[in-house]
Amino acid sequence: MKRTFGFYRQLSVLLILLLIVMSFAACSSETSGVENVPVNTGIDDPSVTTFPDEVTDDPSVTTFPDVVADEPDADPDNAADKSYQQKNADSNTVPVVVHEDDDVSGLTGALAFVRKLRLGWNLGNTMDATGSAKGGANLNLETAWCGAKTTPEMIDALKEAGFKSVRIPVSWHNHVDEEFNIHPEWMARVKEIVDYVIERDMYCTINIHHDNMKEYMYPTSEYLEQSKRYIARIWEQVGETFKDYDDHLIFESLNEPRMVGTANEWYLSNNDMCRDAVNCINILNQLFVDTIRAQGGKNSERYLLVPGYAGQWGAATSDDFVIPTDTADNKILIEVHAYSPENFALTAPTESSSVDVFDETSGKSVGGINSMVVRLKEKFIDKGIGVVIDEFGSRDKSGNTEDRAKHAAFYVRKAREAGITCFLWDNHVFFGSGERFGLLDRKTCKIRYPEIMQALYDNCQ
Image 1 (cartoon, rainbow, N blue to C red):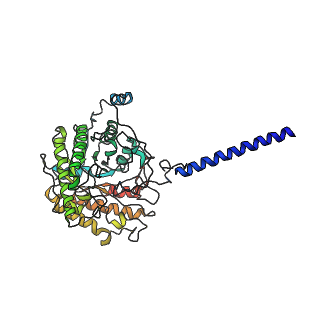
Image 2 (image 1 turned 60 degrees about the vertical axis):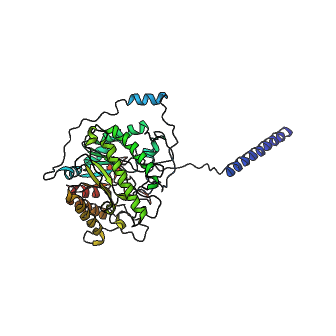
Image 3 (image 1 turned 180 degrees about the horizontal axis):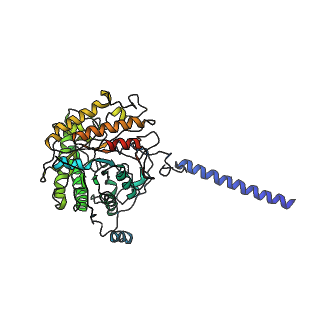
């Protein structure tokens, strides 16, 4: 009994010591402000949506955790980097494809070219995704927002569904060093996806997307010189990489250039600040054209897309917007974005102004679309200047698929009748309270809304 009591006394002492240690650890954790809670990014579970509300492409508003660790700059003496560069020594190889285009009888120049684009799709929330990591390859950003790596099978599914063109939004600022040199692995991955599209007899657009920041590109006189350095350096490298590609590859200067964080971010006013911003965008568009043309090769004749302020059609049709001068003949295309009517296509269903019904016989539903198409036709198309609406669509509002299909049919038909090609915005979001613009399920390569796809296909002929 005495021996047993001694044993229990020792055990009690050990338990007390253990409790003291655990208490101290808990206090340390509490005072450090660190919670040991696992983070679920929702990437592998489509029922968990942590993606940002992403249509207007505002990188300052995010609702997702940083899932990409910082990566060091590429080291030319690093064996792994050397191995990668050797493996991709032929990365400038251009796919050899025999392309077959739509009938463009009666059309010439840019109008014929836009006709051949037929129907486009956006690889949204993918190569345009951003995070805190900068200066390295950061290849994980491709899946950080959309949760799916781009594959040739996705492009096959798009082509089979009836798409002829793919827009690949690309953000570069997370993949450049202090001199704006693009990391070779990131450039190679962009090229790989471009090749997926080109090899499948489709057209492809690449751009500068979420780089609208004061450290990179910001359209005001205060940041104009900085913006010019960035625009020139990025397009020098991108242009050089793709200068041997034919006109199935299109360059787009900027995505929705605007004064981020201001009262006029999305709305132009008749004030000096807005006039200055429009003038800066004109200058940056001209720099883009001059940079690409100076590289020679097929870049001397490549079709180039340029936007007005924030990509808005009203800004593009204003007298202040200036189409860049060009050494090539009729190779400048005007790009606009329009989620119209806004209360149906874009407004969150939780807002009082939101509607989930589209009525082709109602002016409230179709008035904005009609006005846009008429004005773009008068301003550009009637003068032989091509126009592309390279972002449009309508978000899912509690399963209003039939109305979304009606909207898609009317929108594409009206645009196509005027000579405009449309690109559907797809951010691969199907669940949650965010902007659900997903169409292609990239994990299964299946169209989730065949009614919408059929409406698009039937009305783009």
